[in-house]
Amino acid sequence: MDYKPVEGIIGRYQGKRTALISILHDIQDHYHYLPEGVLKKVSARLEMGLSNIYGVVTFYKSFSLVPKGKHSITLCLGTACHVQGRGKILREMTKLLNIEPGETTRDKKFSLQVVNCLGVCAIGPVMLVDGRYYGEMNSLKAKRIIQKLGTNKGGGKA
Ligand code: FES
Image 1: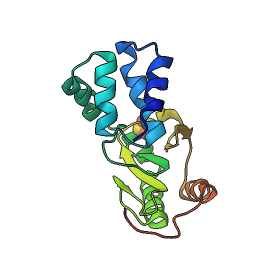
Image 2: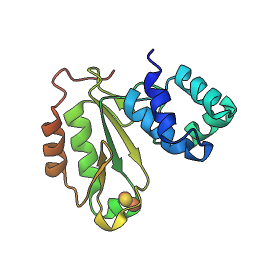
Image 3: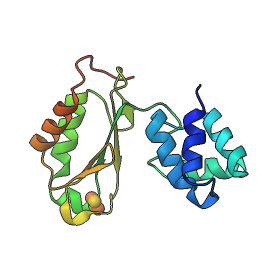
């Protein structure tokens, strides 16, 4: 595995431990997950215990220890979004991508996850795609966004 990007990311944050979460997010954006070897590198560079880093990684649902798809789709299933019809959107997503929440398509193009709140309830139902928030979603809008990224013609789970 090429660890050069890890050095670059840590360097961007001047190797500050307080930037751990941002560092992990940037690393995950690069590799699409947090490989064990990379976490060991982060542990050594920030002089932090590996168990502490794993503690952070496992606490936040947005981090993944298994490879994810190129495009990350997060759908909010929180109460505020629920009231406004997120159930239909989830059904459309699982049908379109042929995966369930927590899974990645076989072609490693898409990962689908659900959360209980994305912190932007006022614009719900909300979907987060590759770090960009899409508000006032409906199943048709969601489908169009995914189709723009290229649907999962190969279908199926990873
Ligand atoms: S409940 Fe969906 S963003 Fe808060």
